[in-house]
Every structure is written in structure tokens, then in C-alpha cells.
Image (cartoon, rainbow, N blue to C red):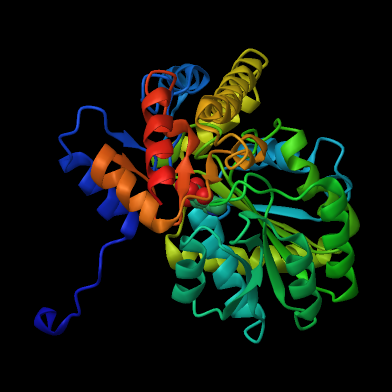
Length: 399
Ligand SMILES: Cc1ncc(COP(=O)(O)O)c(C=O)c1O
């Protein structure tokens, strides 16, 4: 049977990683990778996580299953982090959390749930988006389509195009929105734009699915939840997928959640019953180590402030790197061209570099990024910033 199996092309990011590893240029820089890196180029285990792990090692008494919805303590702490401690949905007992293997697992739960309960609905996704969004909905057999998001000529958020597209979506369909730190562009909506989006969602009775993978990486843990909480307050039904990969640095521990806000407790319980079946037929129970770490940190008066401080450090490092990048391009007369980099949010930036410039950066300077010009801001540091900007100036002049 295997002889007939079609060989599929590797993920372009994997190809980029392999090419980077093979490159012998001592000055090479990896801006393609999708993880946070510190000033030394490492993706460290956070101090709060290490401390929570040592507590767990001493205190854990079982490795038994945690159930299809996951660890109740994880839900108890993650829900207020996402929705706010004073969330009406929490007080009214109409929010359900199902723990999932990462944000990806949560998105797959969402996709399977949509397929089971609303097979005729399409999911509308920003163009561009994190490429795995397409793969997840495709794998679940859910139809999807795109709405506009970026003006590729000017490399700016194209909010009028986004709004016009949302206004054309058939009533009742699902709209996938990035809560903050849009991946891959870094362009986020402002509060006024979010209000306008909510209005369209209300008018057309569209169901939002909010991908919340970078809480704390934009403006702050509370600030980044603003849009999620606005939607939760203004709309009767909302789906949210949360990831603890970036803000807890728990990438490989696969820790995330699917959250559903329903009109009332009865509807919430119906949705919850579906999610239990979806989870069971996928992987039965989610992994417990990451969720135990998150619950331990968020439930501890000592570890929570330490974790918040570490999230602030990561965010400030990224924001400093964004500003320093634009500053360092000033002597080359390129500060205006790349000014958007200092205004974008989160780890990723649509730099505006053209595919041929990206190719030249890779070939001549050992600087690797996705061909769309998406850079991981955390991929460079103060030591190689000068080299990076000199290289960018060189390819921009040549083209
Ligand atoms: C926009 C977006 N959503 C979801 C995820 C899922 O993250 P994970 O499955 O690692 O928690 C990512 C990860 O890069 C992402 O960028």
C-alpha cells in the first residue's frame, strides 16, 4: 500500500530551517522561526515555569487521566485571564473551557465542532493569515474563504477592505479573528475599528472565532484581551482559542484551550457535551503537564507576579527591537519605508520586503525569513542588528 502513497512537499518553514542549519555563514540570522528568542538567541524556560515544575515534581501524586475537558483548575485560572475577572459570562455561568493540545489543538476542536454542528457554515479567514489555519479547517472538512486585511502595495492594514468583505459574508457564518499580534503581519485593529467589526458581526449575525495566541505580547496581558472582552460583552455567542505556547513558553507541552461563550447555561452545556465527544474521538484526554504548570503559576501569589514580569520582559524586548530596527535604518534613508515595523504588534512583522529581496538577503547575507517578507522580530538582537540593517539597505538599493 505504501508504494502508492503520494509524497507531499515539506512545509516551507521547515525547508527554511534546514537551509539555515546548512548555511556556513558565521553571520547568519534566522528570522523565519516562529518562537520567541532572548538576547542570546535561546528560547528559554521561564523562571516561573521552572519553579512551578519543581513544586509539581514534589507534590504530584498521580498521572491518571484528567478527563476530556482537561484540568478544572486550569480552566478556573485561564478563563479569568482571558475573559477578565469580572466577566459577565463567567458570573452567569455560560462560559465553557475545554483544554486542548496547544492553540492548534484548540483550533482543531473548533473546526470539528463547526463541522458537527453547523456543516453548512463557512469560516472566513483574514488574507493573509497563519498558514495552519487553512490546513486545520481543510483537515476537518470545513469550508473556508478569505476576507481582505492588508494592502500589499502599501504594506498597510486595509481596514476598509476588511470591513467591506465582512459586510458581504452570508448571515450565520463564522469569522476567524486574530485577537492581537496578527500573525503573519503584526497589523492589529485599533479599538474603534474593533467596535465597527462588532457592529457588522451583530448586523449579520456572524459567529466570531477568536484566535488568541499572543496574550501579553502586544501591549500587556490585560490590554491584549480588550477585543476578546469586547466581543464577549457585545455578542451572545463567541468562540475563543487560547494558546499558552508563547506567553508561558510552553511550546512543546501543548497547552491551550477552546472557550465557548453561549447565550445561557443550558446552551453552554449543550456545546460542552459536543466538545467532550470531539476531544474524545481525537485524543481522548489532553496532556496534563503544561496545564498543571499554568494552573500552579496563576494560582500562586508568588509565581503569578514573577510570570507577569517575565511576559513584560519579552514584550519590552520585542518592542525595543522594533524601534531599534527603524532607528538603525535611518542612516540609510530607509526609516520611513520601514516605519510600520515600529507600529506593528507582537512577534511578527510584514516588513514590506519583496520576495526577490528576501531571496537576496538569504543568498548573499545568510538572513532567512519567509518569502512574504514576514520577519520574526525576536530573531535578531543588538549584536547583529547593524549587520541586518546594512544587508537590508544593500538589497533595497539594488532593487
Ligand atoms: C496565529 C496563531 N494561532 C495559533 C497558534 C498555535 O500555537 P500552538 O499550537 O503552538 O499553541 C500559533 C502558533 O504559532 C499562531 O501563530
